[in-house]
Length: 297
Image (cartoon, rainbow, N blue to C red; front, side):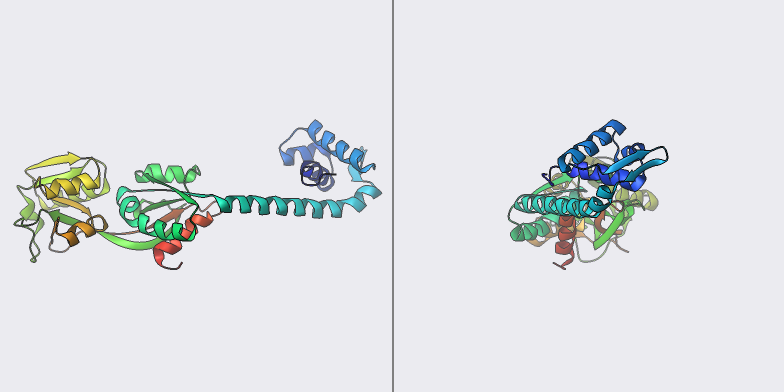
C-alpha cells in the first residue's frame, strides 16, 4: 500500500470501527455511505483480509481488523506528520504575511518592524492593506489577513488584542504659524482657522471635529484631501492646520517641514496593537511581527 496516498482508506476504516457503522462513519467524515464502503473495500482488497463484519446490531471488527486497527492509527499519524513536515518545509521557502489596518499604522508604524522581520526571513512576502476598522476586522474574520493593526477601541471583544504602544492626536501647522509656539494654546484659538482634513469617517477628523464642537469653535473652512501625506503636504504649503496621529508627523517635525501646535490639556491618546483571531490558531508570522513591534524578537 501507498500509506501516504491511502490515508482516506485508513480514515474510513477507523471511523467505521470507532462509530460502529458505515452510515455514522460517513456522517462524521462528511462523505456519503457508499464512499466509505468503497474505501473500506479497497483497503480490504489491498490487505487481502476482511477487516469489518456487518451484523443487524451494527458493524464489528473481525480478528484481522482488531489486529490491524492500532497499526492503522500509527500509520495515519505518521502519514499526517510527514505531510505536515513537507508542507512546513515548502512554506519556509516562501512565506506570506497579509496585514490590514488604519493608514497611520500601516504606513508609519509597521514598515520598520516588517523590515527587521524580512532581514531574518529574506523570502518573506508581505501584503499591507489600508482599511477602515470594520473592513479590516471583516478581512481578519474571513482569513484574508493574518492580523490587523488597530486601536484597542476599534477591536471587538470576540477578537484577541495584543497591545503594542500608544499614539496621540497632534495639531500641526506650517513652520512660523502664529499658533506654532512653545506655549500651549486653547482650542478656541482655532476659530477662524482653515482645517486640512481627510474625508469624513476618518478617526482623526472625527476626533477633532468632536473636540471643536464641544469647545464651540467654528473653523473658517475645510480643505478635504485623501490620505495623511496629502494632509501634511497641504499644511506645509500653508493651506491650514490639521490634526494627525503623532507617529505620522514625527519625521516632518524633526526635519522642520511642519510645526506642532501645543494644545492646553493635550489631545486624545489611543492604545494600539495587533488584532488576531481568537477562534483559530494564530498565524506564526503575525506572532513574529508582534515580537518585532514590541522588541521581544
